[in-house]
Amino acid sequence: MKKPFSGWTLSLILLISVPVSQADAQRLIERDKMLNPLENPAVELEADQTSWLTQFGGWGAFGSQVLSRDSDHLWYQELGAYAEIYRRGNRTSLAITSQIEFIADDSNDINFSPRAIFWEEGLLLTRSFDSFTLQAGYYHRCKHDIDNLDTGQERTQVFGSALARVIFPFTLYKKNDARFSVQYDHYTIAWEDRVPEAFEQLKPRWDQLQSSIKLNSAWKIQVGRTANLYLDGYSMATIFEEDIYYLGKFRVELGRSQQAGDIRFGIHIEHLADSGIPVQPKSVTLAGFGVRIMTIGSVSL
Figure 1: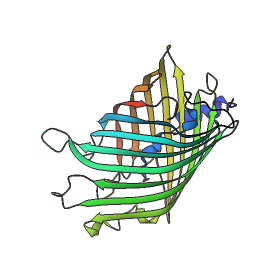
Figure 2: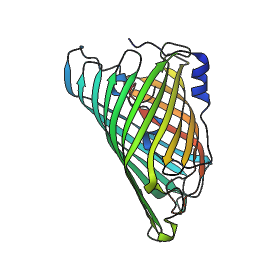
Figure 3: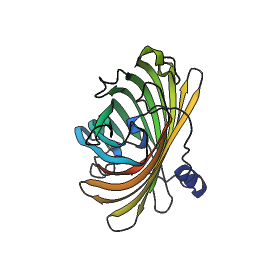
Figure 4: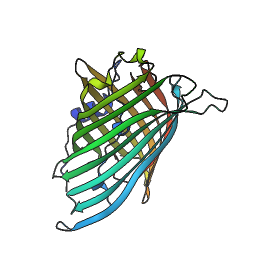
């Protein structure tokens, strides 16, 4: 049994003090999630038991940035999946994962015009200890424009990073009802192309990306037999050769947990000072409503 990491003062700071900054940072698809295949309560092995292709899971999301947005954002869709290819007891897991984030604006006659797609795939090793969980892996990420031939502009990004993450369970109201994680990414690939070339030198210069540090927190509050209130957020610092930039998000959701998984409806606000979409980088504060479905126990709380 994991021991809770408790302390009201620290816990509340982590959950409600999610900074929203007027600066730039990278748009990771998993930025607001903590993926941990060992959290799935439906999978239990003996301590010395080895299993291959033990479980499959993931999440999906759809919503609108109707409360605050720019000309590049109105609709969003996320799809993510993982496959646990190796598991040793309930302590060690190796999984492959892939996810996409699709963005659409309202620039056509049906108010739904595909604008950009972000893509990630990675390998994630997880090792659980009594009071925390360690993770390490490598992720490949890229971004591409959609339906942009008539604009004469294009922005393409490719990244690759080795990551390390530690996840702590802690207690706010009920035992282990919250999670906090710290993640560090070291970038081995950082490439960006902007067309026209006149925009190449505008900051942030993503070819100068070196590393990033991200904090996540999540709190699950039971409000009924199967109903829960969820509070979560993240804060992230991105380190370039000459600058450090920040971004953050806060979300409130009401959802229901069933054996097949969770369904959640919520409201969110997020600041992305460089959204990664226009060739001339610009900031955006996004706020709106959305729905999420996910494998129970494996993603956040």
